[in-house]
Amino acid sequence: MPLDTHSELLKSIDINEFYKLCITSTSKRPDSRSYLDCRPLKCLPNILQNSNGSSMIRLGNTRVICSIKCQLAKPSLKSPSCGYIQPLVLLPRTQAYTSFGRRTQIINNNAVLSQTLLDIILKSNMLHLDDLCIEQGKWVWCVSCDLFCINNDGNLLDCCLLAIVHALKQTTLYTVKIDSDTGKPLVYTKEKLKLKLYDEPLCCTMFVYDNELIVDPTLNEEQVATTLIHVVLLKNDQICLLNKTGGTIFPTEKFQQCYGLAKQYIHSQRQILEKANDSKTVE
Image (cartoon, one colour):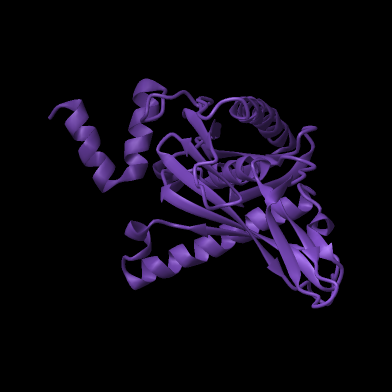
């Protein structure tokens, strides 16, 4: 049997053995990348006309569209001078409408990913919620970040966070004034203000296989990984979030290596995002 045919058959039967065969025979990953190589990254800003800000991120075969919608809302009683920001991840219908058990798992994964993105936004002070206040105790902005996953081929957290940051950098808010007689808000759609961002947190996801650190995992690689590591850094390279899932014991030196790899990976992402402000499509 030819090697290619054998590999494809092994991939459909046992993904772990298939991955082990690729690593041992070629010292490279199944897509011919080395351990530290990333997939091509493409950024497209302002792709949706009816949103306050939008972006599309393509990382390899993983594609995510982010749509920012800003709506007027009543503030909470606990924080009368703070607005809201609500990220929501939505998977494609081809993955959402399968068996009940699989659909339940996807819904749970969506909720976890959405909450993780919200935690990153709040912990990083990416934007100040009091900047979203129109009139204390009466009206605030609610910023909805809807993330539509067109295709999930792994490393979804990195892709979603990139899409949010890129879309929020394009986001504008309408000028709102309160009618003194009725107390109702008057929205001036022709007068727009740029949403101010105070930081830009980005994530580097890597996994451990055979005691080796490998960055930017595909969906198949996430299935064979013994440990997944997410490192979120701010613009000054300060750690915003460090999350490790899996049972592999990590020495301190390994975490230092993770931090060094994350800095290189995220610096390259930032360069692409900066260029995206000057051109429509960046690779």
